[in-house]
Structures are given as structure tokens and as C-alpha cells.
Image (tube, rainbow over the protein chains, first blue to last red):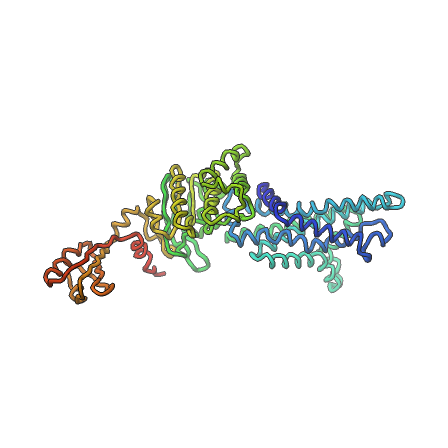
Length: 240
Length: 307
């Protein structure tokens, strides 16, 4: 698995992908957080990073599928998947190697946003007047969300040999899983809460409050696990 | 025995891609795997490398079943898939290191093994280039180098020379011959000269069925068809030629030139000569055509096998 991870991660860093992803993410989120008046923290007047954490998932909906769209789709198209899967690697090795590479790249692009935290910490009046637990919880939420999105991107990529299809499918699925269930819950009447809890938003918001609830962690980890399992099954479907 | 295929069958839906084929390859042998397009060559190779499972039957590599000991088998097999897929955005060096690591070679082993492969496959000048910048012949060498990096006991090459120019074909053949001394090599091809040049033995499959498994020499002997091209000065009655003893059919090539076919292994030339002498015809050419492996290939794979 580590070999696949290293190869994938290197190929991100050796191509433009990594820099474009990080550049686009940081520029986009930077503009939203500090410049655009509707969402700017400076205009808002309160020292919180709400903008980062509420807009971050929407930026991820586009960025993560862009990172993962080629992982299986291109290998399938070029035939290198056959090469990879006839090497002494299990299907899990390949899936997990690619998953960690995509996830690590997202994490890497999140690291510079720690500067936002530091800036706000200093800007607060008095200095340090910031809900650090909330920020930590939100970061954990955002990281776990990126985990689900990365897995979803891989699944979409495994389902098709066409990168564009893979991208659109992944973006749609991420969007739907993020807010779709939340919106649907209004139709569900008594079962509303249940439907809401299927979506990511419910759990994400709960983590944003700075409350690390094991139920939310279990939700994020098990959804990621399930999607990865589906990806592995898709890759192994040649065996049927 | 290095590779042992028994009663291998692969169904795609209702279509039989491979139907009950059995063969074996001994250590040190180079075996050519022949057949028209869609005969089931690639399918057999994909099964032997553990990429897809057989519907029934077994493939043993060094005594290990590919379905139950897939990872152990893959460690012992070097595989060059059809169309030679490569990571085009990687450098030659980087790619070989990656493949080596996947096969579990240590850092130390890679340090000696990668330059060795680069030298063996004639990639010294190209080693610091990106694979996408290499020509087809060099890419093929990279494909071979990656199949060889872990010093496999069994080498499975799916059409290693398609799309190369004649010089490149010769080079790749030479390379295969060089590396095959202590390995078992099975490769598929459509090119008959390749089989003649390289193989100890030929396995021919057609529509998923094994139609021949023999040495090249034996296959040549098996062919009974004899062809004689005769050239007369002036025209000759075709019917009279066809009436000659032993002649099966007469083919008109151009004015005065005919190709005579005989099914029995009789030499037609004396009969033709006497025929010309009797009729006072000037015989200007008389040549028995050597049959080539191509003829054999065609005769083995021409008749469609009934379902």
C-alpha cells in the first residue's frame, strides 16, 4: 500500500495538480474569509472562523473530485490498472494507497489555513478572544469531511473510465451527501431527524460546536469505510 | 514445470473466450502463443497472471494455483500486458524503482537492479527521460524492463513486438532471447517469423480451442500441402494440367504461369516436366514453394470450430 501511496502522492507533487488544488483552495477560501465583504471576517466584526468552515465544504465539493477524478479513471483508460493489479498488490492496497494520497493532499492544503487561526487569535480584542475548542472541532469536522469526499471521489473514479464523468459524479454525490439529506428531511415529516442524520451536514455542524461526539466520529469513519468498500468491490468486479 | 494450464475455460456471458485448453511450459522454454485476433490469447494470459479468474480449470505457476495463491504467483511472474500500458508521466528511473518496490525489492537491491535492467534493455541513454517522450520501441523496452525487474521465473509477454519497426522487432527479439536463458517465457504474437526465430514450441489456439501444441519443425512437417509454380512459354490448357497425376487444383497466376497444388506429399515436378516434354512445350520455370508457418497458421485457424 505504501508504494502506491508514495507513487500517487509523488505524481500529484510532480504534476501541476497539487499546486493548482492548493492554490485554488487557498485563494478561494482566502478571498471568502478576508476580502469579499459578504463573508469577510473583518467586516463581520466577530473573531470566529465560521466562513472557513461553512464555505470550506463547498470548495471541497469541487476540489476533491478534481484531485481524485483521474486516480482510477485514467488507469483504466490507459490500461495501467491491469499492470497494477497483476503486481503483488491486493485490491485493498491499491484502493487505500490512492485514498491516502488524495486525502493527504487535501490535508496539506488545509495546513496553511492555520495562519487564519493565528491571525484571528491576534486580532481578537482582547488578544486570544477566540473559541479555540470550536475551531479545533471544526477542523476535525472539515478533515473528516475531506475524508468522506476523498473516498467518494475514488468511488466515482472507479466507476468510469471517463474523467469528466468521474468528476461530475463525485461532485454531485459529495454535494448530495453533504446537504441533500438535510434538505430532504423537510419532506420526511416525523422521520425528518433520521433523514437529516444520514447526511454529513448534521454531523459536521455538531462537530463545529467543539463537541467531539463519538457518534459523529463513528458516522464519518463508517461512511468513509463503506464508500471505500464500494470502491474496492468495483475494482474487484473484474473477478465476477 | 513452470506453467501448467489444465482444462482452462473462461466464459464471458455465454461466449466461450477460452474453452478447455490444457498445456504446460517447462523451465527454460520459449513458447509462442499463436492465434488470430480474439482467439483467447490475451484472456489466457490475463488468467495466468491473476488479473481475471478462470470460469473453470486451473493454472499452476511453479506449482502454485493462481486463484488461491494469487499474490505468491504474481511475485514470480513478469507480465507485459497487451498495448504495453505505462505511467507516461513518470521518469524511466522512477517507474522502474516504483515497480521494484511493489515487488518488495529493498533499497539496496533496487540500487543494483534498476541500472542492471536499464543496461540490459538498452535504455541507458533514455533513463532520465519521461516515459511519454519515448518512442514506441523504447517504451516497449521499459515495459520489458518492468516485467524483469524482480527477476521472475516466468515471463508472460502479450504481443511484445506489435507496432514496432523491423529493426526494433529484431532488437526486442534479441532481448527476449537473451533474458530467456534461465526463465520460462511465453509470448503471444501474430508474426510467424517471430515464432520461427524465437520459439522452441508453438501453441496455437483458435476461437478458444487449442488446435496445435508442437515444435516448429513438427508443425512444418505436418503440413501436407505441396505447391509448385510452373511457367510455360505460351498458354497451356488448364484442364490438361489439372488432369496430371497428383494434382489437386490449378491456380492461374498470369499468362503461362500456374500454381499447382497437391494434397499428398508427392513431388509434382517430375510429372510436370514429363508433361511439358510430351507436348513439346518450353518449360521456363518450375519451382516448388516452401511452405511457411503462415500457411500452417492459416490452415490451423481457418476452419471455424462448430459450437
